[in-house]
Length: 102
Image 1 (cartoon, rainbow, N blue to C red):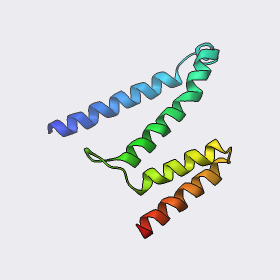
Image 2 (image 1 turned 90 degrees about the vertical axis):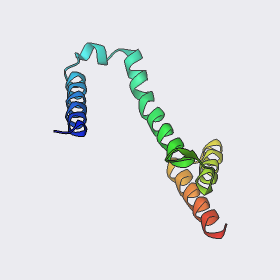
Image 3 (image 1 turned 60 degrees about the horizontal axis):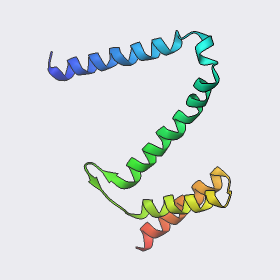
Image 4 (image 1 turned 120 degrees about the horizontal axis):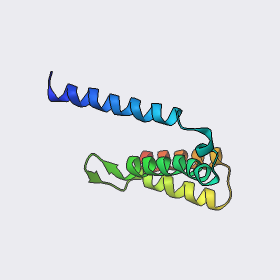
């Protein structure tokens, strides 16, 4: 077997171990208020990181293009207390228009 297959098998084993340890965690640890707060914030951090990487990076280069304008429009919509679907639609439309006409 090549080194790549050992890496795939090792990564799979680690992922399984992490998932199993999360499932076998006692409920008293998961019901702690601090843990609840952390669990509520993790998806926000992951989604923010994903948006940042997908918007401003391509392979190893940083770019600022029409997607950054869409993110800016979404930030303005959120600051005006727009609901999430409205902010996403505004960002998508503004980004598409800028891409089409620029």
